[in-house]
Image (cartoon, rainbow, N blue to C red):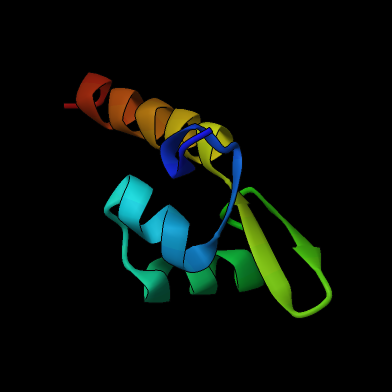
Length: 65
């Protein structure tokens, strides 16, 4: 399985998969706006859920224009 097909990814991998910055992903994990789980000190981003969340936000913004 390649990195892009792994649902939960560490922040550096999720950064490469999504194109979002590590700062944005780390900040979102800490404030709860990015779907993730935490194991010890490591955040694992739920990439499919994040992509759906971004898609939904984009559609809402487009509809509001």
